[in-house]
Image (cartoon, rainbow over all chains, first blue to last red; front, side, top):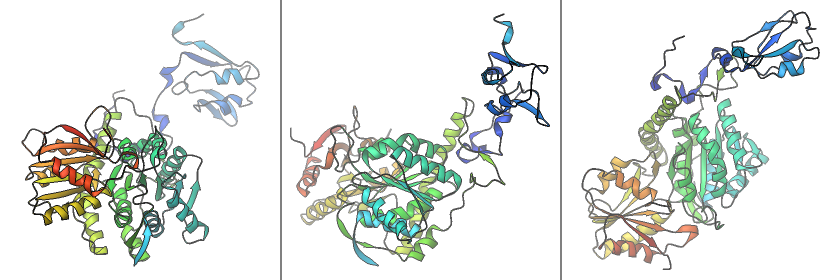
Length: 98
Length: 385
């Protein structure tokens, strides 16, 4: 996506970004070395992954996990480590490893 | 009202009248009494300020940044090592364009440890992005604290402002200070109207965001624009304040018997008072000497100062701190106004480090020394060779 960069004269004072939750606009998924793969069969919807995810990258609908936001997940692996039933597996990106 | 008070009390009085929302301070000699006076005002219910007694100066400036981003009017005070500890966060305050006002009771930096006056603390913060003003007297410290509040919050400026007053010489000595009525100060500084208060949940904003190479440069250039707007705002506010208080503040510096002066001293802070007395003595003997006392050091009004010095034959720029490895910072500032064109002979004097006394004879030696001087010379005043 081509982004039009602003001149210094157009920036809000002090580098403030108007609007909340602006990290959503910045897609950081490409930083990921390993991808969490969620197994819907094994998941017991305890929401520990959703609670611990530092990037708020678990999709949730009616108290149930529905998937992972790969646009923002940086692949830290906290979800896989916290999952009590092994429903999340960390898989290397770009076919490395296995 | 005319009263006898110390520089501490003069600053604390200005703060009481401004009555900021938040004061975050940590004690350090020779600043502590400013905080102590203010704590007493808070304790006695004279002001409604939230006083945050933090655990270090790093925390003091951090609390100031948080409170200022939240939309509060904020003042702090420090000195020497305290400023050194604050500097990391002071750069952030400037980068975030937070109008925090600071009284800096100028004191040397360690090592060796020393509690007395020089300007090395102010010099440490020279490139921080904070505006810096130097006071000659307790009166000027009071007046410039009030001017600083309005300057910091000016919509075009929005930067931290440091008001420098010489440790002990000004902070601890009693002088006659004329204060304004409380209401006059409150009307003058007005209500603070922050553009992006963090606590305004109906208008959410992101503060302190990361900037990649594609935006960092632009944001720093925008910060420089705040500095560029400061001189004009300074003059406007100074003029309005001068009309209010009746004291004739005019310009970025005070020109004392400068018009026809051949030999001139440029200096900041309380030493200007001593230098004026020497100028008077030498003038009485028919010597054409004068003084330029810098009020606004950052942003530096190099064109205006160059214009004021253009007619002089020789100028001594006095730095109360060493910029190790080069000539003094004020010296280089003043000389920069003459870049690429002829000017007077400029000599640099380093003086008064660690509270070394500066008697009138030493100032007289400087004027005498200007009779035989070469540009670029670095001399040490009052030093045992």
